[in-house]
Image (cartoon, rainbow, N blue to C red; front, side, top):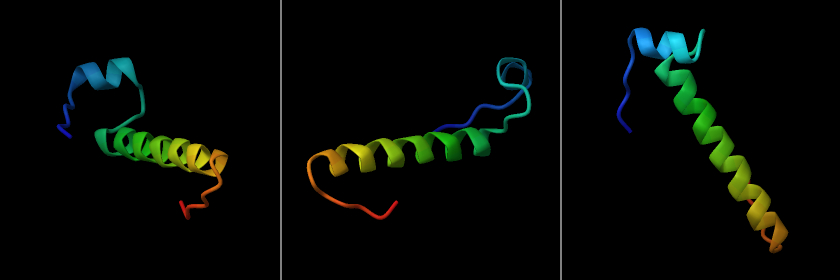
Length: 46
C-alpha cells in the first residue's frame, strides 16, 4: 500500500496519519471477515 501524506491528508482527515488510516482499514477488514466467517459457522481469532 502506498502512503501519501502532505497537506491534502490533513485537510481531508484532520488528525489522521497514514499509519493510523492503514491500521483503521486493516482493523475494519479483519472485523468484516470475522463477521462473514462467523455467519457460515467458522470462528476466527481477530
